[in-house]
Length: 221
Image (tube, rainbow, N blue to C red; front, side, top):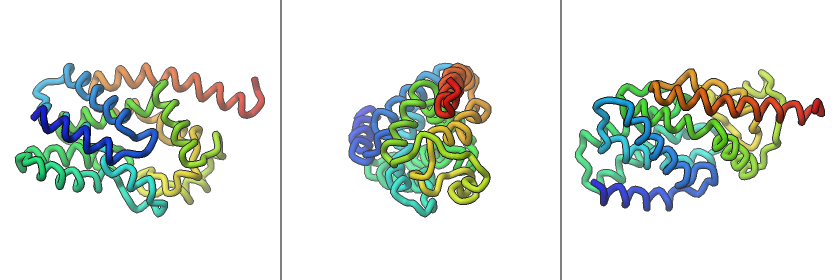
């Protein structure tokens, strides 16, 4: 299986060109998955490790679709299946890996049911918050030409946020909006005790940063 893990890593290096969802993000999620798995029982690492590496295989396709129709979790599940079949993975393992990938984001609306899927969900969300989450958010803002702030109004939500909170046109989003609409809610949506522990700590640092950013934008300090 280890040789397949290396092949999957090489595949993902080719698939991911987005600065915030590149192989670095994948490896952070991969390592967080292993960390969280140490605190859980009966985790199948032959499912969790490939799922962690492949979870964003369709992310670039979604980012380039300004209609909001592409869900990288669902599309990625199918792309992963095709690649894993080429590596001769057993059908039952592929199905479990697909479940992890298709349920790894709360904007999709599919709930993870297995411990492996729950761990991947938590690890992916944790990489969106804390110091690394701030860094990634501003990398995306630069990539898509976002402003630092936009009005977080109901009108914006109606026009640019589609099913389950997915962003239709990323260029019209902003770091402050992402904090308001997504980051603040993450710790409450995590499944594992270890994930919740890490999430609470990371969000505390993020709260301080965005509170100060908002004040500086408005000339309050």
